Image (tube, rainbow, N blue to C red; front, side):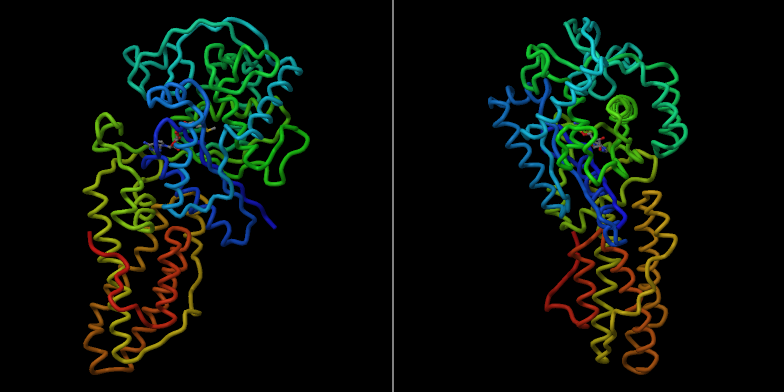
Length: 471
Ligand code: MSP
């Protein structure tokens, strides 16, 4: 049986999940469900990144001890994913003891391989990114992502010999052995690596909230290094490079551009250093802004996925998320636009199609099986390969719009009164189309798709049932 291993980034638990995290996670869920429907053995990993200075600071700000704080926040992520009907197979937390042990083991291996040495780190650090920065990374002296001046840091540190792996990583990316998609992102990374990679600090002296460095307990492991390893420990890996889980390597690792660079340099270098096969593909989706601005709590413009679920229902929220980013583009998201799209595509489009078709079919007691589907089109299969969720939905909506128009053109409400034979023919086509639509919607809107298939089979809707109440 073909396997399919997909990962989301493990999110920082300094705050609860917002629409950006939800986008990546729903996309992973859609792909996991799709590949499962294709008969593959699927493993879908999600989780939380719980160590490091940023989390420590957030916990202090909340007046909590870090463990209590991360327990609470990790629960908030799990709850949000439950509300969004996310079907992950494992939720990895970096404070899981097993993860901590495996990560410490890896540091020992790197140390024994002499890929780690001690020196002094002197430079800039952005706590928001949990990343070391160079002057080139800054705009007006500030981190572009967090709008804050990075702190100047000087401390004793252990370094990983990243420079040594630059050319090897470059070759894997250029030859697509380690794919980075879309192509613009791949090219960006190639020129970045061609500029040369520097060794990186992999320990922190003054950060207590972390995994102790096994060969020098005065330090903790730099949070990114252990975070990457979660992609392995989520599969139950114990830290031994020659005992890899059967699902390894990931077929797709999803993320946005904010964390591509580290994923395309440090991450593959670590794996090469350990002689572990690289992921097949990193897929980078667009970045959400809110009304043209970066979403932030202080600006009060964050869209919380749980509010989307309350307003639009779980499948409504999933639909809106998946149709909101064009491939390779950043997206602007607002309640206004979401509501408009919900009403147009779901309340008026799909919802209306089902209810009017069923009402008219009942007038002449029309029943039709749901076994006449055309199956999934090649075009849609290709769009899944290219990871274009919005385009898949657009394909499905072509059918829905066609069907709604067909009812109008044929004046079906008149046919059921004066030409039953013709009405049956039209209804037959409509039922087949709707059945097809429902099949196609399974990965995106699992509950609604199931419900539509039941409705088609029974030819009835429950009294007062509205699939998508207008908002
Ligand atoms: N903890 C690290 C990842 C470690 S993975 C080994 C981290 N966490 S994060 O909470 O900041 O998550 C970043 C990721 O969340 C992005 O790459 C993307 O998947 C998702 N998004 C968060 N905000 C986003 C937007 N505004 N828009 C789209 N997705 C973004 O980085």
